[in-house]
Amino acid sequence: MTESFEQLWADLAAIGKDPSTGGYHRGGWTPSERAATAWFLDQCAQRGLVVESDGIGNLVAWWEPGEVARSAGSTRSLPASAQAAGVSSAQGARLPGVVTGSHLDSVIDGGAFDGPLGVVSALSAVDRLRAEGFVPSVPIGVGAFVEEEGSRFGMPCLGSRIATGVLTPEKALALQDRTGVSLADALKDSGADLDRVGPSPLLSRMGTFVELHVEQGRALTAPVGVASSIWPHGRFRFTFTGEANHAGTTLMEDRHDPMLTYAMTALAANKQARLAGARATFGRLAVEPNGTNAVPSQVTAWLDARAASAEVLESLLAAITRQAAERAERDGTAVEMVPESVSPVVDFQPGLRDRLSAVLDGAPVLPTGAGHDAGVFSDAGIPTAMLFVRNPTGISHSPAEHAEMDDCLAGVEALATVLKELAR
Image (cartoon, rainbow, N blue to C red; front, side, top):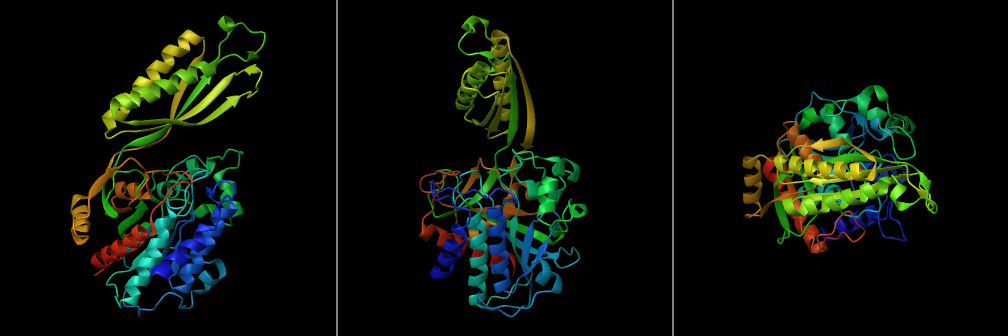
């Protein structure tokens, strides 16, 4: 079991890693993310799992009930369509089951564990159950969902948002990356059929969804925990406009500098988040004309804001926006704030949550400020739960993200126990 997980982990961890930083660059539909997807398809084929895909490229590989147990490494003939394309189209009329998995994409220069740990653990849990001779009464699916981080097209949980109908095909396909490539063009380049982009037939087979994920803070002290909720959160674009001018000849009192307005807004966000016990981060910035010797004409900054409740989040945003406007008036600049994505609070079903905690011998239950596909599926009415694997440092979205191997193996064991409970 240990060697199986370690080998799977080593194989996937080599894909998309920057040797200079140790971080990962697996944006949606980039060569490295496509290579990770090809790895997943190969692993599913080795296990005889039939992979189904929807129009956006979300994948679920099925272990059907009544199937003769086999160990990892054995093969089964796939349908002709799967042999040709690596996948088959999703077929909504078949028996619903229990789906587990996560995502393979990463943030820019991200860590190894965020997403891939859930996919590798899902494959390993299936291997464990088969080795025990367990035969599920309902199908078990292993999922890999696309562009969860939103690092390329700016929309978090993009694959699950489209799958559930939260994001319309028209809005989704018009999204652009930082180089101006649209999602429509990226999908065309990957060979996708744009007419199939929309609500996913895969969801009709998701009777229950369980996502295993590395915990992204320091709250979990046991090897494995269960999620209670996901904080409401969103991404908000602030555009500060002023007047471009010469850095050497323009008097300080004559300037209309949007960088000053932005700088004060970033400090205000930090203070207001601390006062509210919330989170506020300006992590992305675009400056025009972006010259060293020029006062900028425009600064665009993206705020990531999260809080324990919708009321606190709304109050936080109101305070930040108000202070930005007040400073803009003093600076002779202007500011506009536009929400780009907003996710409400997710309270995972108490019955399912408590059932999993009990079957895992009273595993601790805790909330998270991080967003996940599990939250989108839960909002769509699918019974959903999350398992967390301990992160000893609490660092995430960084090359320093880490989980101990013993804890990862405990996560596989916990996931196998949960799947056995739900698939009886």
